[in-house]
Amino acid sequence: MEAVREKLQGAELSEAATKAFLHNYGKLEGGESGLIPEHDIEAVSTLPSLAELVEQRQSDDGGDGVGDGDGSATTTRELLSKTIVLKLNGGLGTSMGLEKAKSLLKVKGGRTFLDLIADQISSLSSGVRFVLMNSFSTHEDTIEALRQSRPEIANQEDLVLIQSKSPKIDATTMEPVSHPKNPDLEWCPPGHGDIYPSLLGTGMLDRLLDKGFKYAFVSNSDNLGAVLSTDLLGHFASSGSAFMMEVAERTEADKKGGHLCRRKEDNQLILRESAMCPEEDKSKFQDVSTHRYFNTNNLWLDLAQLKHKMDECGGMLPLPLIKNKKTVDPRDSSSTPVYQLETAMGSAIECFPNAAAVVVPRSRFSPVKTCSDLFALRSDAYNLTADFRVELAGAAVPVVKLDDAHYKHVDKMERLCPGGSPSLIECKRLTVRGPVIFAGSTAIKGECEIVNDTGEPEELPPGTYEDQTVEL
Image (cartoon, rainbow, N blue to C red; front, side, top):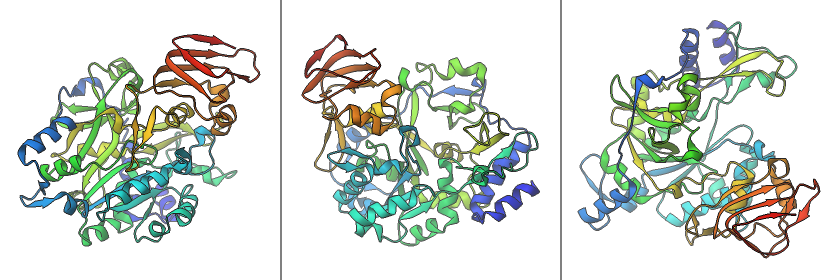
């Protein structure tokens, strides 16, 4: 523990970040696995839905008045003026071959994720405060982009939180790992649960409260479905909850993602991530008919209640430990085995007895994690609305699977799509094997597979393809 303290002090981390890491390290040192076995939890069977909340709100007042958690009435515009939109913007998009913030990638109508987020907030015209949580890797590129395209935002006070870092722990000695060849590899990101110590440790939480901000809507910058909803804001404010999670119905595509459940011991809502599930319970974890709801990572926070809870816990939130076994150099499997200690933002649901969850449409969860996602998003299957939301244009989300050997990185995908993405508005599923060139004037309908086994790029002739396999 002393060696860990010295490592943290040498990095000049905030007191809140230091306390958060020492809390997790104490769990590791004490032998806690961070695992949540199936026999300790029960499934969540029913939850209120956004559609039901909207219907209830319209029948209750039919107007703009909502409760504000303390029994007072206020308007939606007043609630918005008390709200911040906080976007997690720490990812570089390295899995897609990017070397800058993923939020700077052009996704629709020539606009980047960052452009669309800024435009969405500007369209509210209500004093909503915009905050970014950057990492050291994404900060400079992001701020420079804002200076160029949104100088009024770039100069905003309290625009940015910088994500902290955590020391990797030698799995044998349980001390901070040493890697003289590249000391930067001795550190790792602490997970997006770092949002809480960052808010407190930088003083931003106190400054926001002093300026009258009361609510925060938090989401990932690569999820263009995560637009501030006044219906959800009104419900959250009226509920008096400290924390509310947006969840969506799990499908087979989501079976490896974290799910919501209840701890049997105290009936508390908790989040179980894949890394928290014992190996023998993996089949139960992936049973989407039992564990029906997954965390979209769209969260709502009552800032005053958050501050009170962190003060009550000595300047931290006691988030559950996520212990990842890695090597100090992720590209060298023979390098020193380490533990990376992380926390998940959504895990804070277990810290608040009055936490809530609401089921939202799948449209509020549209992350871009792969080039297949980007390929679909850039197509006519999605529209850009007047208020800068990206919404599904067709009847169903097209399931796109591009060959990773040729489309995994953005630059490679764009070389194979000189005409942009084909029309996918009537597509259910598209599978591409081999290097296929999409040159334009092409429509994919129903379920199609395009195969090129030659090893060399071949162009798909322009035309309409429906429920067929095409071999080039």
